[in-house]
Length: 315
Image (cartoon, rainbow, N blue to C red; front, top):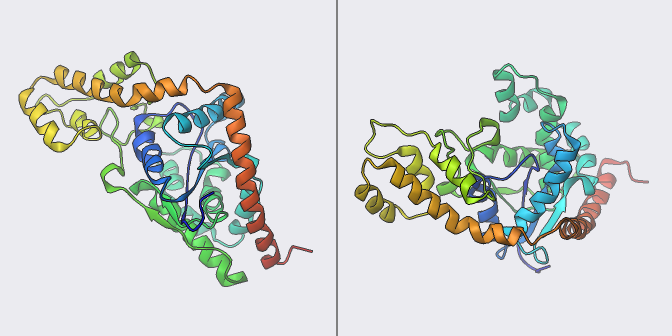
């Protein structure tokens, strides 16, 4: 592992097939930054349990995320790719943090408030989610957490948990900072809202060209606009604004032609990754996860020993 570098932490939930929003919002930035930092990349399987209740689907998704990371360009020999549930210190530390924060503090979490506002039942796991995420981040003395603008609160919660613990038990945790790439902070979906599996407005990252084409052709367009704004917003992830200005001027009013151009631009990026992904079998994915989890556990266990001593439970 590189010495003297700052440490970066990020993660993805294995809650379903990844889409291009996941790629631009998490995978691509992580690949680009992974050589700059000592990098930890977590498969957040316990977080996924707040919404996913299908054991076989979760198991398959876990292996898929490992494949996805490597296909996107992550080198598992350099970055630590690990599974949350393989490092039990995450849930142990989350409990300690839950004993430090208040119920009103957790009620301010966006994910919890959004669910309640929609009249949906929020389980206790979702309610306490921010403290498990704080544990995820703080266990590794993380310096930087790359997040979308809408996820900034997660890092703020981690800083608050660190500050409360340090005030109560002594200086133990480093307070991390978020790194937001403004250009791709929020990736729009086919309906113009944030791209999300829960909205059903995604473009699959590793789908076939036909799958990509079907999703792109479903992008909502405004017939009154001079150019299709939703198509352009996604297209801006793949080409410079100068290139798009020329393309959209030349094809003014030709929405089908612009969508076809977007399909080709997506395929140009996705096809090589899709081919790499197809070479990674289940045994390869399991090996990557096991090896990475051992490396993560070695770091987390040292930090957790210090925590147990600080709070007074160590003998």
